[in-house]
Image (cartoon, rainbow, N blue to C red; front, side):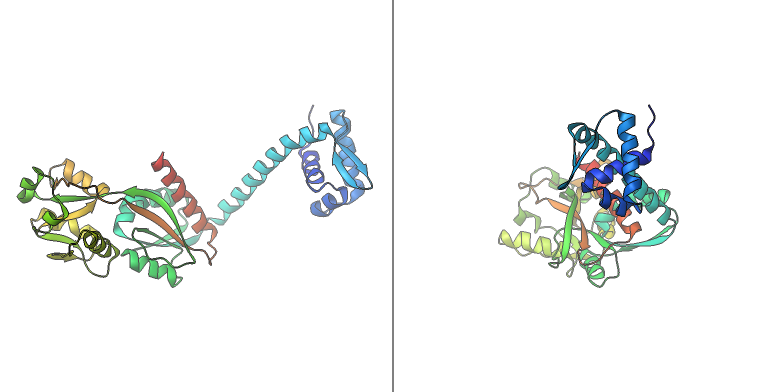
Length: 301
């Protein structure tokens, strides 16, 4: 038995609104046509689907059973239609993102690659800056969203979504390999030349507060402006420093640097997607956001 899709579409709206006249208005038709089509559907299915009275239209038990299936199928079809419409709108456009170095390497790069492969007509504008600068771009309305690491000092109308978590590792070059023998306390760390992100960065603030909680003053012997400068400085024997585990892993595995053990576990940090709740994202930015969160969920499984 083949029944036209239009009959099921009309049935969906009559059942949803419990009214033949409302369904006619939504579908741009008239009540006699809607009634005729539903009579045809009942005839083809050989059962009564609606009971009409002065109080309105209600579904029969058979109608209820049919609606549970039709509603699911119709909503899936509508979603597919909307996605296809969105895809047509993704022929051109711009997605603007402010990101810190750690977030760029920690999660953003593979999503950028996948998005560009799927939507080559969309231009990607990535500002690779500090967390505080990325949040300032978002605050000024320059970027669609920010992808940054904690800590953050966000505004009330900003929304944070955790994408992944990581720990910082203390690392040193061959010159500091002797430190691998015995785990260090916070106070021991400060006995050696320290390399790190300088004042004005959220990472500097993070370590300032962490050491302050342990009654110590965080001080750096060498300050760098970006995270990608840390590893080369450490490899060149300028001192020891903290680096995100995913950034340090390859250098440790290849023996370029060594992980220095600690007596305490370093606090967990997060990579966050930060949005301005008062602004509406474009179709392109929304699609990138969905791909980013989907990729994040895959990492968390």
